[in-house]
View: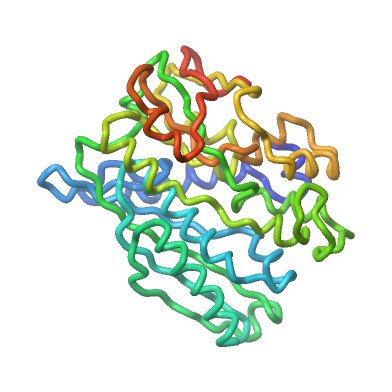
Length: 329
């Protein structure tokens, strides 16, 4: 568990216990068509005719608070779509539809329109339709000026394109796709690290204001991952979100297999060095909280052509699937 993240107010161990408890409850509300439910990157539902629905829901965490304080709400909707669509594509499914939920203390039409404009842009990048949504006003319940977001994405995958741990083999290469920075997790720790700093001052690592650099929207990996899945070039995918590399890579591996990551195989964006130094965060805690420059990690057979196929997305071999469990770096 990330001790630094716990001190910032986020208890990942408690979150894991909650998921275990919820999984037991969800098992009492099911249907025969459910292939996999809580615990994976997306749930799977068998439609018949060798087709499965994949569905995921997520938010953007406390990145939204930073966006609100900086009055920069134009890209947070891209993050919302990315967090859901990237989970759905981890199954090999093509995201088809997206819905959003916006809760506000007081409805300011221009602010909501700005957020949803970002959602629409995210949907364009993910290739899915913004099918609908809900805007709810909560006066007297939420603090003044606050808002919250949630998103819901549904995709479709032919059974023969399905990705998952059952396909992964010892010796598979781990291929990383670069992140655009922080993406949308770890911001409780980020917000603690930047306390007292001027959000409009230049970021030490970028030629732009600090707020804008920290709010760089999450990369959407639908196009390259779908292409690789349809070509049969990859076995599984892990979206690196909450829990960082150490917690998410194992989610795409079967029992008895672990992963080694070569830290020298990819460039870690300077924002992570900045945060580690500002908040005195050990490397282990960084790897359990952030993506460290890898937004998606794919398992692929050696010689399968995955690296060539994914080269336009900046892919690099970053490790290997090995006997054991967990991740060593």
